[in-house]
Length: 257
Image 1 (cartoon, helix red, strand yellow):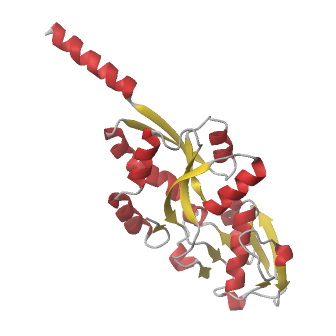
Image 2: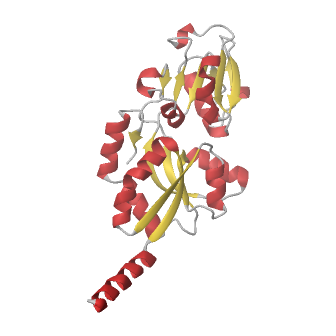
Image 3: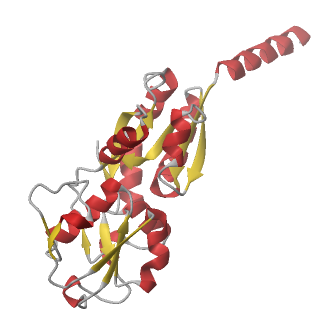
């Protein structure tokens, strides 16, 4: 019996040593929720998943690049491209998971037609999400952007502004908190969901489900192909995750696989 117990203890110790650990940064909704959903599946495959929740869009990339974290899950490819370019990092996409259609919200008007002259409109202050907000306003006819203005558009690219709206750029995470203080706020869906806004019901205008801004799992070149990372990518692409997204977020988050 003692030998059997010793043998079982040895096996248990070996299994513990063999288990791989992944520490992944994520914003709370929906990214951390998706990671928590796949955690039991990964545990069965010998991967211990630790999820660290962040409220900003900078530190998750910095800490992965500095090898303090293994990966992150919060951003789309255009944002990552601009971050790598601006910070000199070389982070890479491992897998595209979902789309969060970007929306415009107001506590003061019920349609964009009701926006008053000189309305205060707030948008994210990072290059790609700020540009994304301006593109949505242009598509809705609130402003006109110069030809060729794309994802990195800035307020300087506005060529027509018939309502003379005043655009302020703020950190993306703060936008829901100032919603009652402004006429219109362009808010990333993850922060809208955290603020208990319903993008499919509350947004005055929203991107379609064909939005190209797919949220991605991001890692470094040295660990993107590791066994544990690929198991995480596969889990996030499972049919169970697809159903979880569709049932929990009801169109506010859309599977991209």
